[in-house]
Length: 206
Image (cartoon, rainbow, N blue to C red; front, side, top):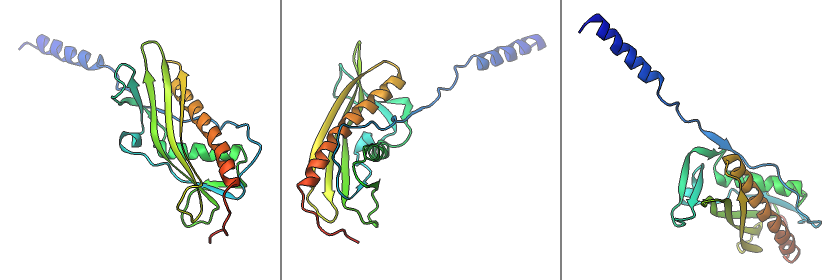
């Protein structure tokens, strides 16, 4: 092999390396600020919000999507993720929503070692983007329950669903999830107020 040929091979190798596509970048998304619901009444006492339960793929930080043509298959985006796990993301969003709406005198994260009047528990049933040929929407379904502290039967238990049309960009998709979650939480606040007003209040546990 001549020196010239060796030089050309080295140049070709370096050129091939420099033309390699860039490594894809991860993108992280959060929900927006808490909206204000049209509710004048409030729940008497303190409310603690537990992290929502989630099964299987709904524990994943990756944003999930469903092709409308194949509605039984749930897929994940490789480089588009929530800022934290959806169970914590929704817990923090609900806490902010209840505080913004003055739903109770005190709203906090649930801690079994701390006394409280009410506990909100929930489960994620759906939390994915549905992609069609010309449209996109955010689909959210949550099972939410309100408990008196120390009682095993819920004062309120309901499955909430919301669907919001979104734009095509992932930022618009995240905004659609935010709107869908706020719709659910606005309904939840009304139901919580009604349930609290009709539930007998025991002494606050220590």
